[in-house]
Length: 203
Image (cartoon, rainbow, N blue to C red; front, side, top):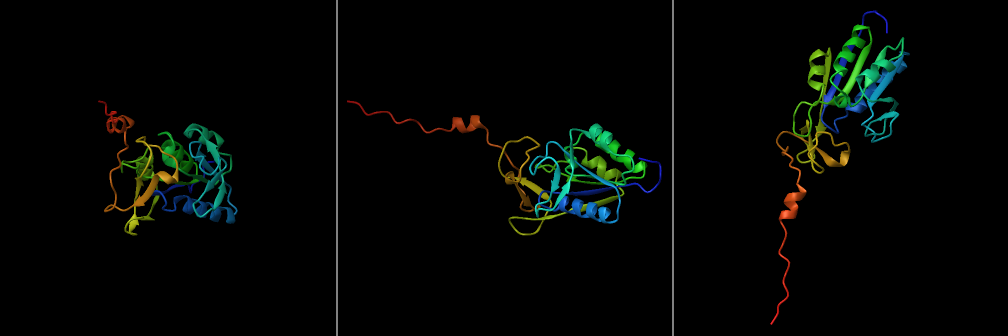
């Protein structure tokens, strides 16, 4: 990292199935074609397609390093790198904002992709702060599985009520009109609703 000018922060945001990773891979590959030195990072929690690649749903792949937190990411940035890509940036700690700012201030182009909202439509992790400091924000949309309109929300359809539930099968892309608040069923409630056991007839 040197002190030359030209750094920036680009955020690719949206719901699940909207093509965020695909767009990140596209931009990183253009940088490689331009013979720029690039590095790509992802959080260790995202192990859906392995730990050493960013993989889009149309099976585009890019080599990546898995890191546990923002400090580890910063420590692994190599001298002379020109473009840093970060996938699933919403899973990082709040320190990722300062890391992105440091890299950009050092002249590095930072491209980060992530969910801007969780399944309850709440701002996700460090994304609000990243959106506010970015020079460029691209809002991606999926296709609503119900009405085929533009979908911005990640509708949870199964699983628990934790904010982080990694896996595609637990979600659907929904638009505002088709979005429904998800309520995880509690085992205690299910146990309470039981039919009485028939008693044998005597006499």
